Length: 241
Image (tube, rainbow, N blue to C red):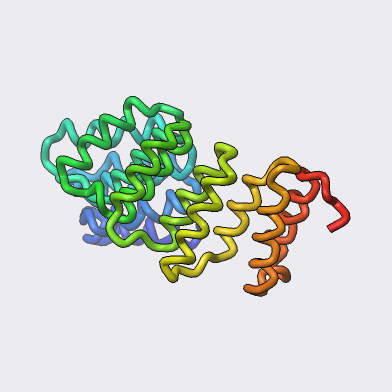
């Protein structure tokens, strides 16, 4: 961060300091280091804010837990009436709505994403599906997921995690099976999400199935996976395994 601040000082002294490309890069840098105040200061000094400026600032607020500020910037950008939002800024807005458990506002933004033709985009769709799942609207989450064109492993992980978060172990396992049927390879994130959905003796058999898959894939040497696996057995009251 200190090196970044030195670079910032150098940029200010140069002609590049007034160029929005350099300023956008500074916003991203400060946000990644969690320095949202510095990022906001840079943003406020940009005279000609472009889509990247708004997207970087909105993403920074959303990722650092300032969801209301993220949505404020999203709304402010729309009020300017200048830019066409892209999949990244929609993703940040959906993430903010999900963390705030604000599905109604999320539905409004969903409508905007349809207007801009982004609802089938993998990044937008994944964020939107995750938002609905966090709000407990699993039917909407499922519908959005199946509208995504060519969902990747990240998209499948998100929908599995969403149903697991809501305790829907059978549904999560169904997505897992479908994912493998489509020749996609579940990763360590997939199995950790699945394991979190098994919380009672009734789901122990499913947990053991996933355990077998973990051994087959060699994930049994992965510490986070093993910790989640142990937690699953404790919750399912079968610590002897």
